[in-house]
Length: 349
Image 1 (cartoon, rainbow, N blue to C red):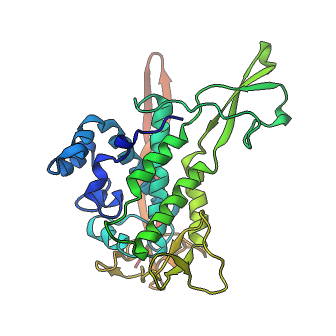
Image 2: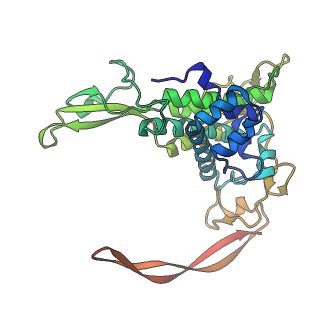
Image 3: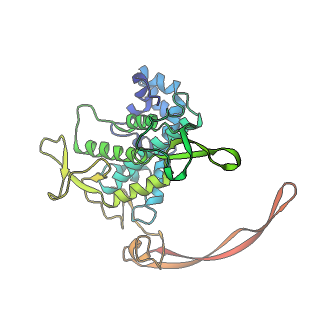
């Protein structure tokens, strides 16, 4: 595993935000920041931060890509919830200023996204600062299954998740100078839970070698789980997130419910109840659920009764056109007909 030198870990762009790199995508158009835009924000600060920003834009690009990956996954996981992670601009900023359950997921999945994107870039050879991971020691906890048979050895290009973890940690774990407030402690905890959702579920993949597919020898390496699995895991933690409060000295957190166990490293935590996302509120960051598409046959999340908050819904018929009856003509064209499809959708009032 190849780690950044201490002079390189302090990524140039993190000095822009007092709490998290997420804020770089909040103001203006969210999730569209590119390395040049980020570097322009640090140029006026000069010193080593600005120099690093100019010398390693490819690393900043991967952190940017990871943040976008995390937000897309958040939108997928909460697509049927009252707040579906699609807020932008001032609305998203208002959400991030609250220590609610939804914010916990945003911070966790974004930190995980940075780990995943940076680690993937290392394995693909897109970053000079890292590459394939060193082979783990023999007899470790993660070894190929004996049920597959045959001999095996570590080889191939393993994912250097340690490098991705370190970059994500430095990019998202920001403390305001002289402050150790509860919000910061909560954000740091949720960031770590997101990173561990990638790190703790590394798997072993193998490739067979031998005549006629005999698999007399296998080369094996460690790789990250698909990011969708990471998102699924974080959604489970979101659903059982633990409400906490600060201790009297303000230096640690404890569960609000006295009978609840203290949060472990994988738990998502929050301190405030979520606002009413049924109604639009710029102050609270809620877009409301009016005009959301719902499923009239579903009685749970995503169903019209739930998603429309009791206001009812209206059914519409829409006509779509799409390619159909496509044929491949040698060589090399595909010809398709255009077909009309009728669909019925339900929209919340």
